Amino acid sequence: MTRKQPQTVLVTGATAGFGHAIALLLAQQGYRVIATGRRQERLEELAAQAKGKILPFKLDMTDAPALAALPQSLPAGWQEVDVLVNNAGLALGLEKAWETNLQDWQRMIATNVTGMVEITRALLPGMVARNWGHVVALGSTAGTYPYPGSNVYGASKAFVDQFMRNLRSDLLGKQVRATTIAPGLCGGSEFSQVRLGNATKAEDVYKGTHPLLPEDIAQTVAWVLSLPAHVNINHVEMMPTCQASAGLAVDRTMAE
Image (cartoon, rainbow, N blue to C red; front, side, top):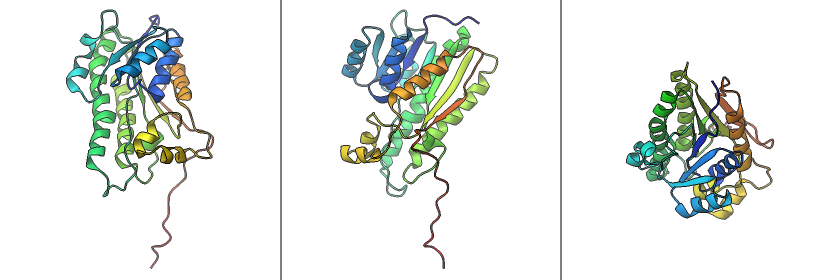
């Protein structure tokens, strides 16, 4: 099937970090980009940076009615979304499970899981009806490799990966692709500051490292989208060269 040109891409969480970089790069490559997020002023700045090639659209990923009505809420000429980039997400805290703030867990689930599922459900029928589309979701290596304090954040990203794998199964025989991109240590965004609530602590996360950057993630999304229509990349796991899975932890203080 011939690829529709130009394709319309909706990027969630485009006010900063990965989403900002993804929206900007895709606009530069000729895609029609709808950039969504809660901070309208950030979206307007992004649209200006892209010289009018991006449509800013305010959207809260925890607003279920707004997500359900999204296809009809978009302006005329923008309602047929070909590519959904499920980027919006957050991590809060690193406390042990028995010490964490339950509201932090609930916020992560609401955005990382529920919001992602609801916006996918809203836009997917149109892709299937047109027999053309691509859903890309930002996972994390935290969904594969556990570490202390990751608990619900890691679980939410494991959900993303499994949801997308099952989605690919449902889409068998359709010209609609499904891809998860799971980055490891990545700097250059607000992620760690939001998680830790402290700029100094956030900087310490990356001290002495050369982490991935949002632009690296954007390049990966663009590559996945650029492949021939018969090629589906199921899962991409990417880390900086300064990072690797560390194996299993062993406590050597518990011997009798």
